[in-house]
Image 1 (cartoon, rainbow, N blue to C red):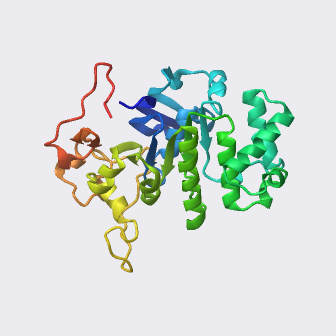
Image 2 (cartoon, rainbow, N blue to C red):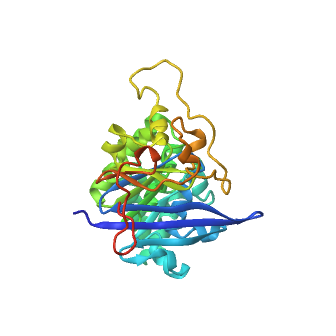
Image 3 (cartoon, one colour):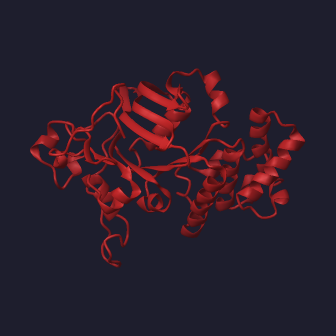
Length: 338
């Protein structure tokens, strides 16, 4: 049995707005095992990035809060740790690649200095040692002439190179878990493929686990071991990459897959779109949160929120179409099994 590294249990987060406290994520459960890549997929506004901020406890600085649930990492509950304790974990054990590399890098420091800063802060390296390690990291992430690039500023580098710099910063302290939030969104297809290949290569070499956040099912197909599909703050389907792509069960998952150009076997026709839009935070419909957009909606869908039904031992979905399946049970600790 695989050894678990991160287990999120019934995590609920929220933000205080002019209209009061609203939930951003609702009772989500995700598990990442050692050496595994889990992709969290869904449209913008689904709560994916909020989940990553909650894991890092950066949500505290974004005006949000953890309302309920646990974030177990190596037997520690990150949800209840103080920020002083989290500073020792962030960067050292859990690192994050943020969405936009150009806004993630400081324009007034060289890229070498920005990589070295993490090593000086977390690893107590001297400035000389840290800079040499920064050059080695640039070489590791495939940047040519790393000694020259280390002395350059972000505006002197391409988007693809800046993304590699951000990855190098995240890897500086050899974290066990890498959270990658839309690491390929702003990149062209060729560079996107290079970044995904790089993440796979680094994972194999360093043995780290990856939680990758994306709205692109094609990206998930390339890199994931498991996929969790998120909609309007909840996990609506979760399973192995083979189960999700070969036997998708939730109508939302099916819609995401049909939206991939050429997924159904044909090209050149009209692109498929899921009708409607994701509901705004704090304005969820009653019952199943997807039912206003669902082509298979039934009367029960607008009345009761579906539980997680087990399609197989390794595949669950929150959809009333599968109400004849067993409901995912809680274990003796009150934790839903993944």
